[in-house]
Amino acid sequence: MKPASKKWLFALLAVALLLLMIGWMAGAFHAKVRPGVLPVTGQAQPDAHPFVVGRAAVATTESVPATIGAKQATTISSRILSRITRVLVRAGDSVTEGQMLLELERSDLESRLSQSKQRAASINARLTEARLNLERAQDLQKRGLVAQAALDEARATHDALQADLATAQRSAEEAEVAISYTEIRSPIDGRVVDRFAEPGDTASPGERLLSLYNPLSLRVEAAVRESLALPLQLGQAVQVEIPARRRVLAAQIEELVPAADPGSRSFLVKARIEYQEDLLPGMYARLLIPAGEEMLVIIPADLVSSFGQLDVVWVKRDMQTQRRFIRLGRQMEPGQVEVVAGLEAGEVLVPKPN
Image (cartoon, rainbow, N blue to C red):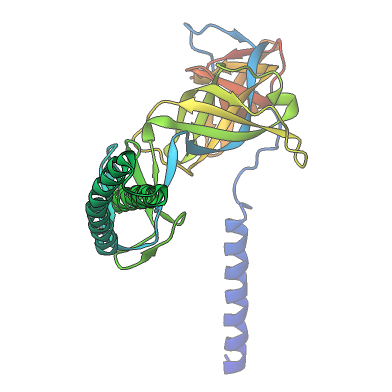
């Protein structure tokens, strides 16, 4: 055989082998089952009880996006302009009411307090002398030995020193109060959310330094559309879903803001939840709001068989047991499942035949 003929033969064999492999992978050599409902051979379990499909009224809820927050939260700031010397807590630390959080520089304030006290002491000494002079002037004036002008001058000096002493004492008190502001303490029992300043920074009045929240006062806040929000009542029990924790919690509505957002036509609803150690402010949640009732097809979960992503039940019809593909919805009560499509009320289900 010529070399050219051999090359053509190998090429034809390779193409034929490739076509055979493609046909095998496409299922050309396997028996095919037409789509639809097929009768299934075999008998149902003798102790099985048929289940008649029906529709049941089920209370439904609507999921509204919400955010976890804290009812008791505060921002720590300074009341004076001063340099920060120490910050005693960091984000995540637990604190108690009255615990020291930050310390500010106090040397300038202590110096001002000392000056005010020394000035008050000096004025007090002069006031003592002026009081004695006033008493002598009054005595001499009664005897007619000094003029009324001298008495008036002594009294004016005494009164002026009294006013100066009161001013110096107030200045000392203000310095003492300002010194107390250099020790910033926690106003609540709670947890530090964030820290915005470090030692060496200058604290300005009103500038936030720390933020705290009370983990025992967690709640969820959601903007609920008006048709759902208007029927809600204070104290009403609702449920809250926490997707990140795969958990559903009981909640109680504690606040309904009596004004709608004109842009979204929604009302702000706040619901209190019990303390959960692993929940933090800002986490995503869903507020489950009652939305009336819905007629659903619900069947026992043990009558459903799954093959990959397909769900199958066996329907008894015309004295035969037929396989039926269905589409499932939500898990209802334990052992119950919703059927979205594939079954109608009145049909009879039986367990999978042997």
